[in-house]
Amino acid sequence: MVTLELQQQIEDFLLSKNVRHGVLVPNSRKSSNVCLTDNENVFIKVNRNYVAPLTALRAATNIDNEYIQPLIPEFKSLPNSHYVTVWDYIECKKPELTKEFLNEAVEGLFNIHITAPMFEYQSGRVLEKILQRRINKLPELAVISNIEQLIEKHVTNIYDDEPKFVLSHGDAHLGNLVNVEGKAVWIDYEQVKIIPKEWDIACLFSDLKAVNSPYAYYIVEEFNKLSPVNFKLLTNMVMARKISIATHMISRHPDMSWDEVENKLRFKDSLDF
Image (tube, rainbow, N blue to C red; front, side):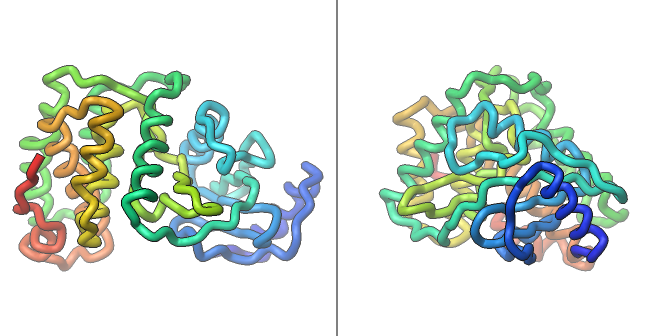
């Protein structure tokens, strides 16, 4: 929530950097953290930790994407653990998930993957560590044992085949894919990481399956044309993505049974890779 004190601190920061803006209002495009915009010049993101804004700024520096340019190339630390970044505002629309649009989206991910990895190399166990940290934040619930069993089966040994690590978007779900002037554009680079490319494919594939898109397998085929896909790894990455979503669901609804989680995320669905 944006308090008057926080908004004044943000406006003072903008003034100190000579950034002109209109009346700042909450922006509905993003649901996490705090976002303000004047719907014309600036888009302001307020995070509760410094890692996300730092990662997003580094991504903007190294990834060729004209739509993710910061107006101020640094983040501002404010009291009470608020970290502010200021971006050029882009007018975007919810996309129609046509074959042509999704093909552009796949090419966009591929262009990120071939970017020179300017980020610190992360260990091959990064995905397992992320999931375990999320579990550790959950209350002691019976369903956690089910998640840990899935992690052991699908995540612990996914790097045994020594997959190729690339710079990845890290959070390539449909909420971060927008239509800007008819183009498919990926936004929100706060979770950029060095990880096998199959993770980005798994994120997009899983979301398309969830909305019953007829093009879920199509985007996998298109990506395979650009860069050979490890289908065994992709299968496990899809499961890892579902596990990740499960931790969010359980954190918000701790009274959910495992059967409800399993059915909602369709853990038992077969994959035709």
